[in-house]
Amino acid sequence: MPKTAPSRIELEKHFGVVCISLPTPFPVGPVKVFLVKHDPPILIDTGLNSEESYGILSERLAEHGLKLNDLGAVLVTHGHRDHVGLLGRLMRETKADSYGHPLVRTLGRDADNYPQARKEFYLGILEEFGVPSEIKEEANSFYEKFRTFSEPFDLAHVLEDGEQALGYTAYHVPGHSPSDTLLTQPELGITFVGDHILPGTNPNPTLQQPEPGQSRSKSLVLYQRSLARTRELDLGICLPGHGEPFEDHVAVVDRILERQERRGRQVMKLMKSGKRTPYEISRGLFPDLPAQHIHLGLSIAVGHMEAQEECGEAHCCHVDGILQYQPL
Image (cartoon, rainbow, N blue to C red; front, top):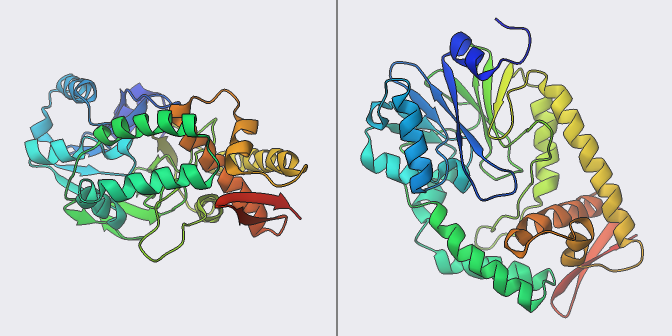
């Protein structure tokens, strides 16, 4: 067993795992999915629903003497489109089984059932957070494109927290998404961590549409609680959805928390002069962020404003329907 984080070649040599990089249009860059060369083979995550991703995935499997139809199962780490976008097509075209968190199943089944409700939530958030009209129009055009990155699917099996399947143990660690799941293979000493912990960057706890009758969850607050749990787990070598494999996950978690603390201080400094909307905080943090990615900046801004409120350093109110925060 290697003592340092393995290269891609060593991943295949020691663990029978092949890393496959697939393109995305998002600032985080390509997404990593993983072929586990078991009998039958397993795919961890799928990439976006695009002909380019489908072609690359097919080609990479062919390099290892495999066809898509040879896949025995697909396991997903969470329900974001760059991780489940191709799942519907793979379920149609192959005999592969599928596993993931119950919220991933709900997402797949509802993908086309409530598009108007999802759009209304998204546009409502832009309105509530004080985003100017011209920015909202541009962001809305990207939302329509964003919907094409995935299609409906019906997950065959759900994995609750602590359940096992195909030799993997699932740990539910919500925050970056409500469905974030660590997939740990204790015999090999590896864990597929999705976007829950990433080397060199802060995973973004994104804004989530609440269930009917419920309030929107505080994603960053929830994420930090999950990080505290993850820190205590035995993960071995971690294979993330973005970036390179790493071994000392405790150090990675600590660096994420340190960066979040620094970001929180930035947010408090921006709020010092009085009430601020999430959009104003977002632009203060990321003045050059394109409108098509405004939801990412808003997620970070709101997350830290909510975290400051949670620890008693700020409070929020609505003024003419616009959400505003103020330091205490």
